Structures are given as structure tokens and as C-alpha cells.
Image (cartoon, rainbow, N blue to C red):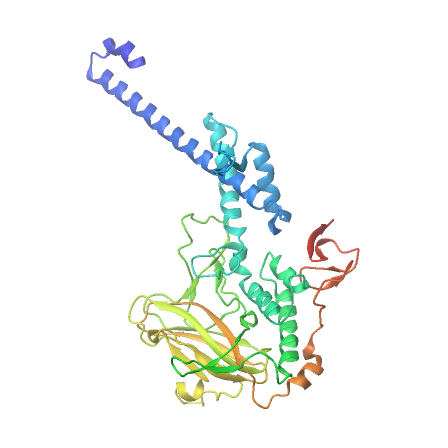
Length: 438
């Protein structure tokens, strides 16, 4: 309208150019306003979803949830599923999201700055694996990535007879971080339950059958003991570059991840499944030594992949009986490892590793010409350790405090599965349910 009204005054090149510049600036401002409106609308809708999705789960007691809930109230952001079908016999569920409409640039900029980091952080952090899922590299973020060993430990407890009301199972399911104290309690309870079963010669574990098609011997019911590994699936945070649990022996293997579509800021350091990688064509190695593994025969499966030559890259294991490299001698893989598996062989399982004193070292080596990645490791017991006295080990208590299968009525436990008194403040478990005591 302005240009149409004033077009008669555009009698010189400079006047025309000024009008063009003014119009271009208006278009640019309108484009930025439109983009900021879309950004706000997207964030407000996602904010409402975070509040709805986590209203009744373990994340609703966190400070971050309180923050997003307060912001949702500030911007009147709500999200709900509504059956919009007019036919009573047919369901047609649609998600309805509502929030304040903002049109002022200052208000939009303030809202976007206020919402962006907290929305990304809570979306990426408030994560729970569905039943049957497994944490997979590049596919899991937040709490689900961090507590994988606790979740696997809870599943093993149930395999060994615990039910869903077991204090440690409940605590693992409600864990908000990679809790070392809780992991220790789970491991001790797993070991005691396992020894209790293995001292019975008629136990159902590790019975062998013959596959009629291949005539190969198959061992039934291997027991997953990956809970004994610290950070078995590998998680890290971008800015701290954590490689929790894995010691660098040589080189500089570090966390490597695509980090998803949302770029991290220092205000959103959510954990995420990653891979360990030393850089292109760089030699490196990492190790982790377990000292409390139950006695038994084991299969160890490293997970890894390679983008290049995969020369000299492998996973290995050592026990306390494995000879060390003699002074002045070179590594003899067949002598100085209890077993190993090259990545270019498809990372085949390392089988028939016997442990009787709890000690097992896990290691990964990157060859000088590789572009390889280590994704993680799994450990499963496939048989008894021959000659080991499981009855005596069970009777000795294996340095654990036995926790009842079910939480007793009125008894209160913290998230580590430890019984606490009525004066305890924080998140507690009672009768299999979670409460906040203030």
C-alpha cells in the first residue's frame, strides 16, 4: 500500500533504490518473524508433550520436570489425545495441543530463549526403554542410556526368581542415573540368587541339548551378567567426554556420536549412547577389570564396526590365570589373552572363558590402519565352573545383604534398595511403589 501510494514520487534511481531497500528489509523482517513464530509454536507444543508424557512416571519428581511444568503453565501449553470420531463404534484419536499465541517479536524471542534448552534437555533425558528393547548405539539418549546395566541387572534378578515388587527391581526401574551403589546391591543379590540355584545339581540352568538340525550342542538358559560391567553399552556427554568405566591403556580413544539433530549447548549436556573411537588410522586400547564376577563359564560378546580396513582391531579377555607379557617380550595373543575376536571376523563371541575368583579383564584394541568403533559388550554365563563349591560360596554369604523378594508392608527403601527409617527424606519405595518424602 505504501509503495502504491508513493509510486509517483519515485522519480530518480536513488528514490527507487531506497524503496527497494525498504521493501527488502520489510520482507526480511517478516520472514524472520514467521520463522520465530514457527520455532515458538514447535517448542511450545513439544513442551506440552513433555509435561503430558512424564506426568505419571519417575521423572515427575525432578527439578527439570518442575521447570517444564511451570513453563507450560506460563504459556498455557497443554497436550492431550482426544477421540474425535462422530461414530460411537469407531475410534479416531488425534492429539490436540494448545498454547498462547504470541505475535510480538520481543515476546517471541524471550519465549524461544526460555524454552529451547529445557525442551531439548528433557526430551533427550526423560527416556525409558520399552519392554524388549535394548540400548543401541546412536539410538538411546538420557536416562535410558545411562542405566542400561541397572536395567539388565533387574531383568537378570527376575530371571533368577525376583518378582516386579523386589526392592532392587523397583529401584532399578526408578533409577535416574548410573548409580554405583545400586549396581553393587544388584550384583550382590544376583550372585547370591545364582549360587543358591547352582548349588542344586537339578537346577534348570545350563542344561545341554542337541540341535536336531545341526547336531550341535546347545546350552539352555544362559544368564546375562552384563550388570557386572560398568557402562557396558557406552554412554557419554558431549562436553565432558566421559568414558565411564573404561580405562585408556594407550592412544586416545574417545566418545564418538552423531549427537542427533539437535546440536548440544553447554546448558543441555544430556547423556547419549556413543562409540569409542581413537581417530582415523590411530592405534589405541582400553580396558576394564571386573573383580566380583560370579564363578562360572562365560561367553563375552564385543560389539563393534569399522568404516575402513579393520586391520588389527579386536576385543579380548583375560583372567587371573592368563600369563602377563614377559619383560622384554612381545605380546603373544594366544598366550597373553584368554580369548580374542577380530572385528573383521564379525566380532564373534569369545566362548568358554572360566572365572573362579571373580576377575575378568575386558579389552579392546584399535589397529594402526583402522577406522573402527567399539559399541559395547555383553557377558553371559553359560555353565558352572568345574570344581567350584557353590554351596560353600552361598553359605559364606558372598559379602552381600540378602533382600527379601517382596517389599514388606510398611518397610521403606531408598533407590539403592537399602532399608531406611521414617526420618529419611527423598525418593523412597514402599510396597513396591515410589513416593517422595519431604
